[in-house]
Image (cartoon, rainbow, N blue to C red):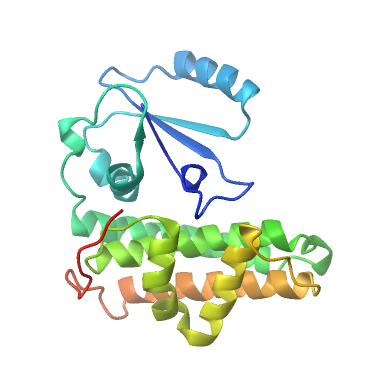
Length: 227
């Protein structure tokens, strides 16, 4: 059993961050049994997110999760299975990134097109926007030869490349407002729209690079990095 997620990262965590627990089991996952156990745990800690996985094939099914396990994990019990000791395959990461971007863009459109009365909490909206931004930056970073997965590292490395210099400023603002390092702007809905817009631009840039645009190369000039 191990924990990942921005909850563990004091540089990237927010008051909305979940505690992501992954239980790796070699036994078949019995849905009723595990569901009842997890429900009992979440009744005591609502922000807890528990996923039960079989390690065989996980690097193909969820390569970003495996990369984050290797780079960010807090191992609570047991050890990392041998099946997860290798770095995820580049093509598996590319397919995962493309599927994720396709699924995420409609969600962003829904948020971005909401009535202004629904865009009244810039702190929470900044949190939602930066979640999309950070994962897009993670995918782009890993697909261009990087190995870091922590939020601050991938934002610094990839945000300007995906969003451009002007919008990357809005992305940085969203990240800081979500972490409550700066107060939310007084324009409320206007700030929310800016944060969601830069998230949409970043996702479209990633999707374009992966699907019919410029192929993300397997190698890059990223140097050695720490997690």
